[in-house]
Every structure is written in C-alpha cells, then in structure tokens.
Length: 328
Image (cartoon, rainbow, N blue to C red; front, side):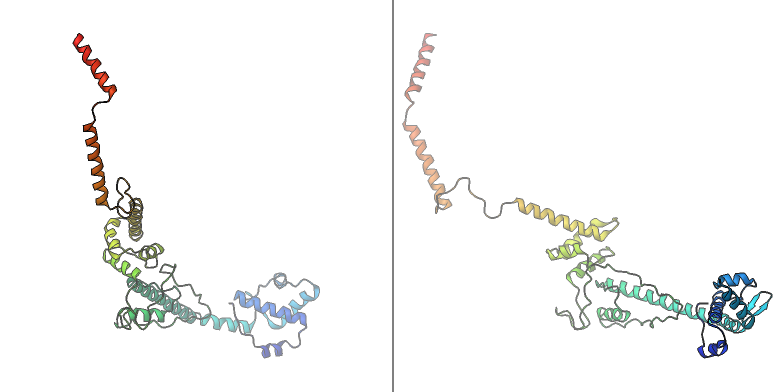
C-alpha cells in the first residue's frame, strides 16, 4: 500500500498529549503498518530497531505508544484504525484492477488505431510525424480518400493513478518527413480534399503497383534522384530487377543511381559539339573551300613530278647498273 489518508484534525486530537519523540515514533509505526499491510511483529527489540529507536527515551517511547495505540494478539500488534483502512483497501482491489485493465485495453486499441492510420497514409505516399495526434491522422486520411467516410475515432485514452503510460510505437521513417497536404488542395488543379501526390510519392505509388513494398517517399536517395530528373518510368523499369532482393525499394534506388552515374560518365567521355576536321583550315575558310584548295595542291604536285626527270644521281646510278648488265 503506497497511499493512505491522513486526517490531520483527528490525528492531532488523538496524539495531543504525546511528546515530540512519542509522536515521531507513532508516525513511523503507522507508516510501517500500512507499507507491510500486516500487524507489527511481537518482538519488541525488532520493532525498536525498525523505527530506529536507539536511545533510552526512544525505546521507552516505543513501549508507551504500543501500549496506548496497539493491541497485542497472537499474530502481532494490531491497530484498529489501520486494520479498517487495509480491509477497505483490499475490498476495493478488484475494482481498481478492472479500471487498470480497462485503461490498458483502451491504450492497446488506441495504439492499434494509430498504427492502422499510419499504414493507410503511407499507402497514399504520406508519412506524418510520429507525434501527430490521432485526430490529425483521421483528418489527413479523410482528405486523401476524397470524401469517403472517415473511420470511427477511438475515444481518448484515460488512466488512473496506477497505470503506466508507454510511448506509442514508431511506424514510419523519421528523416525529413513531408508536411501533411493542405486543406485547400495542392495548387495543381486538385480541389480541396483531393491533394495530388508529390513527385516522390508518385514514384512510391508506381513502385507499389509493381510489387515493391514497403516504400518511403522521404528517403534521401529517392529525393536526390527525383530532384536530379529521374522519372517514374526509370524506377518502374528497375523494379523487376529487384525481385528476390531483401529490400526491394533500396535495390531499385541503387539500380537507378547506378544507371544515371554510368550515363553521366559516358557523357563526360564523349566529344561535345561538331567533330573537328583532320587539319585546321585557314581562318575564315569554309570546309568546301578548304577541300578545293587541297585538291588543287595535290594536282600541282602530280604535274611537277611528271615534268621533271630523274635527278643526276639517279641517272648515274641507272647507267652504272646498265653497264654491269652488259658486261655479264
């Protein structure tokens, strides 16, 4: 028993004649009685030691208080007022336990209801903050279901003095949660009560249709890829590759990221713009003029070579070879 009523007026009237030491001893004995929910032991020395009565006056005060306010029976020292309070406390225990059980049941239903609401909103690409009230979750779900009947709201959770409250389970991803849709629509042609999905949510909805689940529209990599220009089609095309993987959503993000990195690397290795010609042209010269000039230069070289005979050195070498052949 952790609590008992203390009627100050009645107590003062009954103990007005006690010394300060006797009053303190009596108060300690009563607290011990209620805490143990049982009579005090018959061993006088054990009682004196328990209430820390060490001096002669303190030990004498224990004897005085026991003799005046307690009754010694076979099972120990009884105090009639304490016995009445304990009897009433035990009689009310089933009712207190029923209240505690009812409170636990209401809390359990409330937790299950919140989990259902979070899962339903995630199915629409919305991830509310973990501390969003149940009423706000109900309103958000009502908006995204476009006027469908709102689920019944669980009554508020109550508790009595003995019930311990536990934190609600977290059923969403914590990082960078997007805000709930506005009451008046999304500014993209959708009227009040029918907010359109964000680009990130649109990807998640498409992936769920491909069997990729769970998804997270707040995932940093998803947001980075979409912000970089990745389209819903890219993610859908990568979805079949994630079949059989542990975390299909993360695998799809990895596939799209890898393909975009390879495309960027390839783009960095390719020449940008028109390809240059093999030789530089004269400044201001067009390609056609350059080709015509090159052809004229080649023709002039052919004519020069045809009009000039062999050089003197070549002629001498040829004569020498011819003489040797005649000798043989």
